[in-house]
Image (cartoon, rainbow, N blue to C red):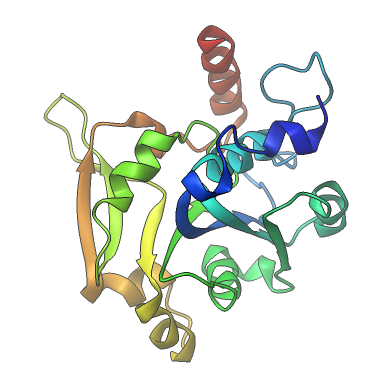
Length: 218
């Protein structure tokens, strides 16, 4: 199976949500100790499949288009995904300034009335998660929080769903405030029972656990 075949959704494009999904893949992977976007993930029997491949595949299963933000080692991602339909590549030259800089870079490329924002190291997001958050769309930014059955504090997760009406204000603000801080007056908290929304992979231990979970699932 080619990379294009792996990344393309099973359903027709018209069955997907009419929304852009902004995927952040620009960071340095400092906590991992090595660049994580191209780490092997899942079944490798028909060619290299990476952590980012799985995140993109899941986004394309649910969303019409992905805006993929590159930064560190951008050239490798540009080459790998240049010919993939419905992936729009955007380079963030200021990727060392942090995640918010990448998000702001992507926002100017949104073409839909709403936009999901997620991370390239979240390989377990599924269509149920996207659909559930989509149902909460409105004039506020829908921020998902994982609420387990235990009486613990909810944990913030992804993907965030942002109405395009908020984008001009975010881009116009001339400050160093993180995007989440800028959005605080407009946040709608969604308590969800899906642990996948917080399963981003930041450390070697997290990577090993994710590999084991993926192997067990298949």
